[in-house]
Length: 85
Image 1 (cartoon, one colour):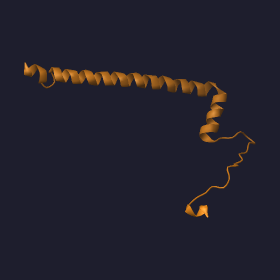
Image 2 (image 1 turned 90 degrees about the horizontal axis):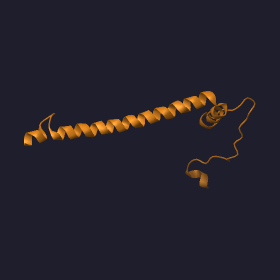
Image 3 (image 1 turned 30 degrees about the vertical axis):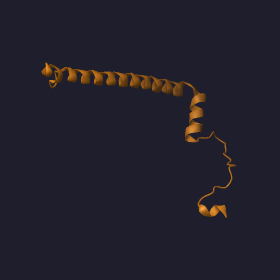
Image 4 (image 1 turned 180 degrees about the horizontal axis):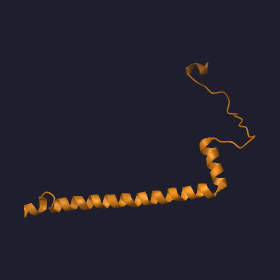
């Protein structure tokens, strides 16, 4: 009876471990499939939506249109402990 519970590779304990691992892998597969779908949707949007592409280019990569300039009115940058004097 004890042999049936703990036999290496064929016991109930081994079976439960394999089922647990299978469940974790199935869940991970579902998450990866969803992430893949999200990325495919993002790719399609980047290919077909010029406004979205421009938004990403501006926000993420700091790109500008032709004849556009950036003005920084944030003031001087402080650095080091001597700037408080």
